[in-house]
Amino acid sequence: MKPTKTEDGHHFHKVVDCQYACPAHTPVPEYIRLIAAGRYTDAYMINWESNVFPGVLGRTCDRPCEPACRRGRVEEEPVAICRLKRVASDNKLDEDVAARMPEIPKQKNGKKVALIGGGPASLTVARDLMPLGYDVHLYDDQPLGGGFMRSQIPSFRLPEQVLNQEVNYILDMGVITQFNTYVDSLKAVLDKEYDAVFVGTGAPRGRDLKIPGREEGDANIHLGIEWLANVAFEHTDKVGKKVIVLGGGNTAMDCCRTALRIGADEVKVIVRSPKSEMKASPWEVEDAEREGIPMMENHVPLEFVVEDGKLVGMRFDRVEAKYDENGKRSLVSLGEEPVLVECDDVCIAIGQDNAFPWIERDLGIEFGQWDMPVVNEESFQSTLPKVFFGGDAAFGPANVITAVAQGHHAAVSIDLFLNGKSVLNERPSALTNLVSQKMGIHEWSYDNGVVEDVRYAVPHADVATSVKDRLLEVELGYDEQLAFAEAQRCLNCDAQTVFTESKCIECDACTDICPTNCINFVDNEEDESALRAKLIVPANNLTQDLLVSEGQLQTGRVMVKDENVCLHCGLCAERCPTAAWDMQKFSYEMAKAGAES
Image (cartoon, rainbow, N blue to C red):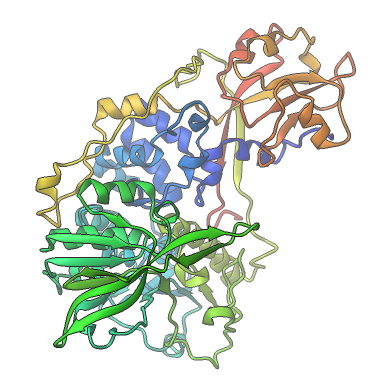
């Protein structure tokens, strides 16, 4: 194999698995170390630079970072990255955060940008463009900013004061807001002579279920996302005693838990598929079950049962999941009598769709499959050059952190476009750095003892109390002592093992001390699979690259390290008598608008 190219930083970026997996590439190990040091405001600001909503995401993120966490290769549970983010938010000094917000130029640059929709993608665009001198106007049909973070995430998961604070950090930069304003025509917005328009309207339409009885029982059958919004804005404050929630996603979990809090005595979540295939985050399912809500799997809806004009139940066909040789699933009826489940109300939470009836089809915006706008996946520009999309409005429903990442990318494109540059060919590069730490001298205490350390549970409010109060936050978060203990579980994966061939005397001291046998001195192979197979422990994870030394060593061999199982313990650097191994701190920051200048 050819030597590993480490110059551009991509190799080391992939090795920081948590940061690499985060759509916004938040520097996770860096802020966890700051939390361990009690530097909560610093940890918050590092988060804010990347993910914009640390307090929101510390409670509600889908946590793509955690399955990637290297601690999960040592023991069962990864570091509680998401909940540590909340620790930074809960313990920051608000006045210090306010003082560290970007300075907004008094002299504007003469360019106006319209944001349609006040959710995380639009707010991220505003946050990135305001410091560059743009006039930013935001339109939203809700009375306050936040979009679906406000209308679809219940207060018992995300307190309103947390959301308000983080939304206002951005709006207070001088964004001109036009709330309670439903945009029913993109042409009308374009006619106001904006230089660019960003569409971040989310996926506002809940999928319906067209089966017998739907129209007759309409008064007590609700689309989940609309029902949650009505509860959030206090248009709905009660529900029937027996409630069925259809669907297995996070919206379904929010619906069933909300129903408990506004009057339901008995709530059932009913899904077509096996419970193991529900799309809801496992922790959301656990929270629902902790509150006594059962999950009925393998039940396919047949009809809404309406008697004397009133919804009284639903009938379901019991099925089993069968899989063909390609793993494709089919649901096969067991041939039993339909199951009747009594209910007073039903929430349908089986998915969301985009809706663009307000975008005229003669503006130059091309629409493709599923009536979605054709959007470039890198620039987020539509076929009408001055119109950009992001968040759920661009490629369909995802999550908050994905919307934030897309907002960053779209802001880069808008800034390039409005400065006459190519939105694809002149994009700024991410900022990377690699700095030697010189063990024992650097500011953070480097602990190279890799020990078993079970994940610390996040305390919860009492169930009997919390299900009676829609506004009472259920998760209490880590206190400072638990946060310190959990932060210590981080393996500091951004402390990279850097190898200098010219210093190596091939004494094998590093291979002797390596706890995972990831360091190898072997004869090179042309074929990567052959090289992977001959290591002390075969490197079978093809998604993680090998580190192959530059050129041959004195014996003609090469050093090959399996980055997949390296625990960044630093024992190789401590043991090496010639300093051929060095621990160097790697940093990566995704490009933001204005970075090219």
